[in-house]
Image (cartoon, rainbow, N blue to C red; front, side, top):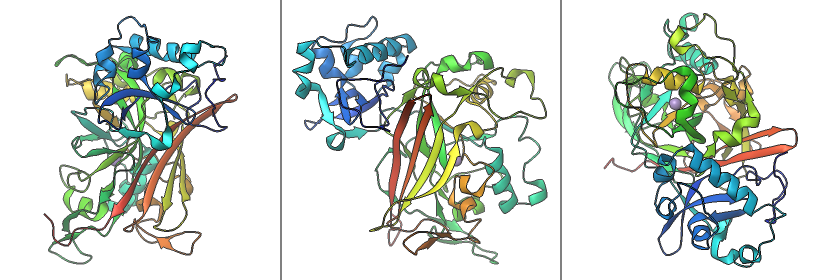
Length: 421
Ligand code: MN
């Protein structure tokens, strides 16, 4: 039985039931940073809870909760985080009536709407995969040839590229429309100007929790031991810049101007009840990438668009389990040459599209490269994102009366600068 009832009020359909226990970083009004979790509509300051004497956990030091990032807590290992999660579920269970806890909530509870959540990781490396067959097929059809949409390598390895870690920002950070080189239609020479094809990509990213030494690959069946948790990830993309620059070495400035993550990391432990199998892989993959059993999770994904001064509209419903390549295969492939992944590294999934048009995870696909504009309820239409639009990603798992969510990864698009800096 999952612990559901807490003495903290938890609204129905809440992202953060007592069972979830996500981890993030809270910035207090005095400028200090604390590791935090969320329960219902409350953010829980874990440093404050520790100082009240409620977190006696082997391997957990006060200092791990007093950083601007979660890396030291993650570095401590999964057993520490598992014990911390179990302790928090006990402390806030409805049956726990310890007066010293219930009477001192002002010291450690912050209402979600008043809590400033910051980027919770020092991300030294970020990799973006391209693991949705539907997305890769759609993009390949548009950018190249519908008959050769998937390149010959695609079903044999999880294609990916090294992305830019420094421009990853947290939920609610405004995004500036980038300038770049663009080849106008029917032109032979590029221009330099603001992107006219600003897009989002609906993705999830996993957080590396255990490093592997340089030169030491991680076997596919052990890969999950290295994965600490998942976040929502929006890989903002300037399609016009991307299309001109991507040959032959792949995405560069069309992607590196910004990516947005949700503030909370959901642990693999919390996701366990939602474990499931992914799609059949045909042809069979090479032995070092062959993964057995249920190696993905049933996570419903949504993208919402809100034009300035208007209401939000859901434009996409997809699922994490649509991905052709699972996280274990991605991590095994990434380390198969001996590359060392490090604590806090992020590996994003690639845009997660399904087979139906309503499940496409980017404007490029939803509006089919501008040929099928999306109609919004307020009468506006969109082919790509416009200045003032807020794009928000959401995710949740639901099964047997248990529901948990991931928070949001949102961002509002700011107009391009008049002149690039
Ligand atoms: Mn991407």
